[in-house]
Each structure stands twice: as C-alpha cells, then as structure tokens.
Length: 147
Image 1 (cartoon, rainbow, N blue to C red):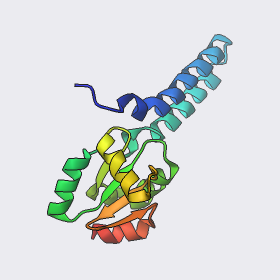
Image 2: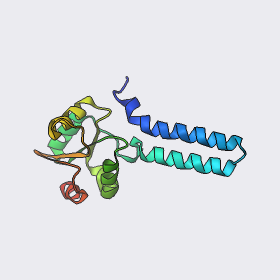
Image 3: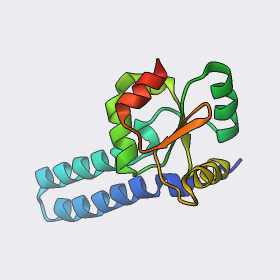
Image 4: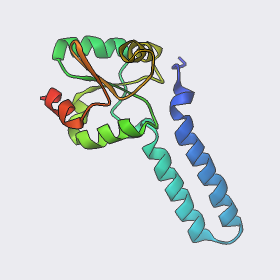
C-alpha cells in the first residue's frame, strides 16, 4: 500500500544524502579520502536531522484524535525539515514521545486539520490539546500539557 506523501516526507533528507554522495565521490576520485568521508558524514547527519527519524513514529490524524480523546495527551502536527518542529522536539526531549505526533506531509487529513486551525496555512508545529490549540507553542507549555 502506497502511503501518501512518503516521497515528499523523505525528499529533503534524500536530497542531502544525494548531494553528499556526489560531492564525496568527487573528493574520493581526486584522492582526498579523508575529506570525502567527512563530507559524506556531514551530509548524512544533516539529512538524518531533516528526516522523520528524529521524531516519534507518526500516527494518522484520525487515530491520534481518537487516542487523544481517550488519554488527554497533546497532538503535535509537524513536517520533516521544519526548524520549529525540530526545536520543539529537541526541547521536549524524552517527554516528547508521550505526545501523538502527526506528520502533515504523509496524512492529507492532518494537513487539512492544520489549515482549518491556522486560517488556511500549514504552519507547524501546531499542538492540539482538547479544544485548545497553539501554533509554534512555547515548549514549556507543551511539557505542562504532557503532565
């Protein structure tokens, strides 16, 4: 089954890896092995940070809404490559795994929800707790919502 937005979700990370492979290959062919390895590692590291790998497993929007109604935990709508999402994820640390994370690039319903909450934009991170929502909230507020 093809997941919607899968190519879009990984495209930025893939682009960094591709550029890293190309530049390191040219350095390798020129005999600069150490520089080639350093470039490849650097590009791969940036690609990993911009990928969905640094976030908890994404939950479909409908399931996240059902789970949040049952357990009261926040829903965090995010997308790969978003520096504000990365900042929130980093500031939440391990506590961030307690929230329901929804990737708006892999779930069209999630993108529609965010557009409805933000006046037509896909501005993330958008955090929903019960009937309240905040766009790019203070991480301390999100930690408070996590309990």
